[in-house]
Length: 616
Image 1 (cartoon, rainbow, N blue to C red):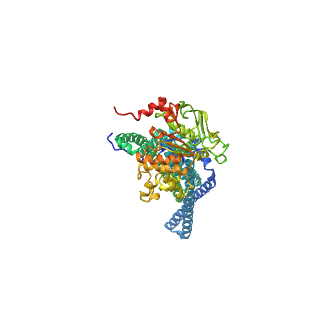
Image 2 (tube, rainbow, N blue to C red):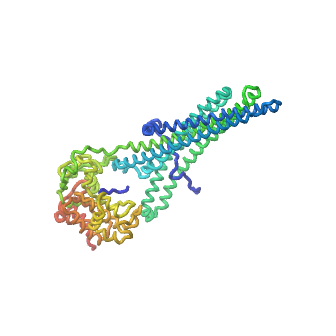
Image 3 (tube, rainbow, N blue to C red):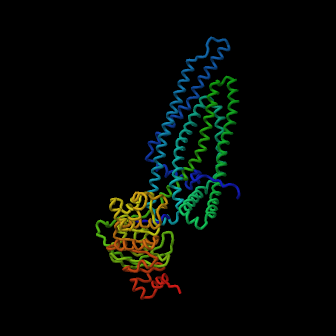
């Protein structure tokens, strides 16, 4: 089973980790188009939401116009009573109007509830699909992507960006439909009451837009680096949390806090200014709306006195003016939500659009081949995708099936890189690697890796039982097979001494077992996988000498009949290897058995003797 490394004096302020303030999208139009295309499967549900939101708004809009009739009836009846007329207030008529108004508002509330329910389902499903897509994407990205991208940035996309996108989507679509419907409906109703007063009300639109755009332009520059800084803070916290033991051991708390404070201060400064300026939009819009409200009241009173408008008409118009300014203010707020949504969508789709590992079409499968384990490195050249530097310059070696091959050399010589190339974690710059005479590119990556087991120096265990962690090497394995693998890896004894035994749950940080025990479990996992090619990258470096001897004995049995690559710095562990490859600066400088290389008194002999120098 493949196992990889998990790559002033004022108080500190700043938005929490879940802050929704998002940098403006670099390509607002392009990101919005991509989002619309992504929402195609939900188009009918969104249409239902739009219809329900529009109907709900229409029912709410009609209310003041009908209520005006009740006001006019009361005014007419009271006027008649004051002047001594025999006709009083028609309460039956008013009662009917109140009943109609009640039905309209209840219907409006019901449609608003249903559209909210449907839209919540859409946004939740979008969030679910995006997270699934990101998780699938992560497994398809080449390792080179994670060499240049921090864990915090990746986590920020699957948490902050997806949450922001779905929340903005949930709020903005219904608000846009409701606000636009309300503006059009209210404007129509206002025109039917008085076109003169409507012109006064319309005057607030250009004034409001000019003020809103001016404020938004000033606030935009403060939005720019917030998401980037938030990603850096996330990455820093994740790194410090995962490496808190090392950080504390080297007294790095002060430096860690200082770095966090620097990033947090940048978020605080930009967020404070951006939120303050964007927060001015509502008060400004309310101020302009209140001025127009006062002017309309004065003009309406004059028109009522002149007999050109009823009191009920004034009452209805004033209600409509209030209803007219509110959706405009909402649209101003929606502009921020749309920017957040587009920026988050851009980051998510940018991640989903990253180049994936190109999977070749399989020319042959492992099932068609009876793999023996013969491996040929033929003039292999390699350099990382994001660098022009060639690390492995010209590597050639022939490994026979069943041989135990040790790869030794100083740090940075390219030892681990070679076995990663063998498993196609990276693609070659030149040359080829053959497995039983077939180029490894003739197999799919997943099929190729079924015949490899890898145990790294850095162990990886997940938050599950010991049984399931070992079973990760062969998911369909029975419990008795798992236990047998643990016995071969010399892990059965210590497992049975633990509380719960094989059913003990390893905690999230795997701190409830020792480093040596973790290594034994990963070796048991490799034993269970039962692959033809075994790769041990410093597999016994984290265990004590006594345990190492037991593991070495188990490894001798395990390696029998299998092609094994052993990367080791402690050269005493590989003296019985069939072939030792000495690497330096990406090339093989010597190869042979331990005895042959010692007699040659060259690179390997110097390396070996340096570990066993006797004190003078």
